[in-house]
Image 1: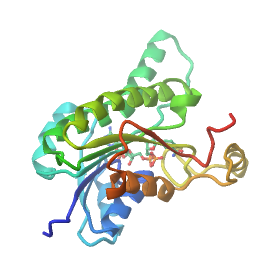
Image 2: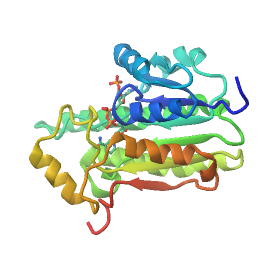
Image 3: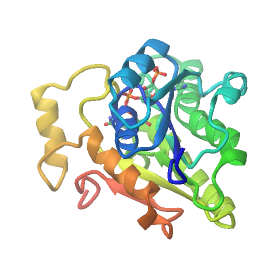
Image 4: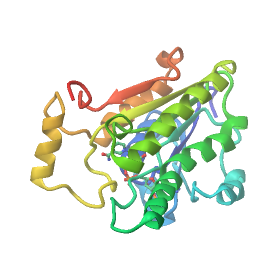
Length: 245
Ligand SMILES: NC(=O)c1ccc[n+]([C@@H]2O[C@H](COP(=O)([O-])OP(=O)(O)OC[C@H]3O[C@@H](n4cnc5c(N)ncnc54)[C@H](OP(=O)(O)O)[C@@H]3O)[C@@H](O)[C@H]2O)c1
């Protein structure tokens, strides 16, 4: 192992943005571990990524503290970069009473807030100090609404402030990358229609929708040597979707 090897943990690394991020780190020579609930999806992703080192795939439900504790021994002893990417939109508003409303909000909390908070807490004692980087994938939904999902992404932004404060004295940073619409992931459960893609393109200032690699590039920058003085930030990667709307 060279002095320059970095250990990178990417949650939700089996698909979409997480997979592209894992590939980016692996291709630049880092030692990458990907996490997700489905072992077969993770194993297929790891096998398909060509990097300097093989990508490790570990199945764990990051919303469950006991699952994380059970797998901690299999995670690297030193972690240079944590990418909190696991998350997703719960079922959109469904009919029902308060019970259904409460269930939806709890599900979105479990899906989006707990995976980032629990994984980070678990890895904090192993985070490189100085030099560690925690990068969390938020969403424009935090600023545009989108019900309980947007509220959970907003919660991650508030949490990131506290985390950045904690990490500062250790010479480590914490930032949130804020994508807009990104095609080619499992997020929406299937490919978008042409009409939907046209609507999404029109929301941007650059006339195209985002790709997983766009987000991965921003994560790689924030994890890289030129970003050591950037912390507590929300880093928009959405083709200008937020501007003017
Ligand atoms: N696509 C977009 O337009 C968009 C826009 C803004 C923000 N985002 C955010 O980007 C991130 C990545 O989403 P994506 O678009 O790439 O969608 P995706 O393909 O559905 O990726 C989400 C990943 O998270 C994993 N995951 C979910 N819950 C988990 C849990 N409890 N424990 C472990 N892993 C879990 C999933 O794997 P398993 O199901 O196997 O666990 C999956 O690999 C999410 O945080 C999402 O909110 C996406």
